[in-house]
Figure 1 (cartoon, rainbow, N blue to C red):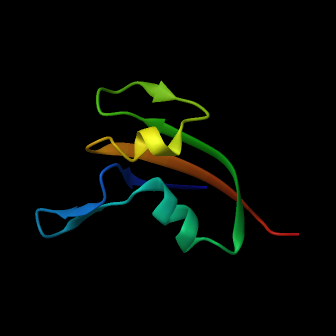
Figure 2: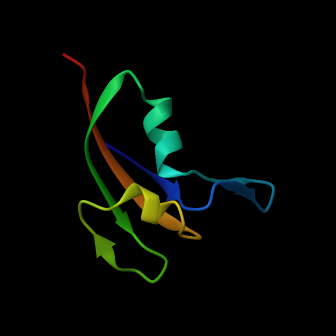
Length: 70
């Protein structure tokens, strides 16, 4: 399990990284993504979230569940 800021990919305030959800999946390409959920910009929890929609948020919390490839 991993959580990280997701949304429009960028470095904010020269320190904080916001990742596009697909970037996170790519970084862990040796694992299979099991589930993706997000807390959006206004605080709504979205289970089984759409990665394309999450990539348009400004500063959301993406929660990824991965397992080892078999």
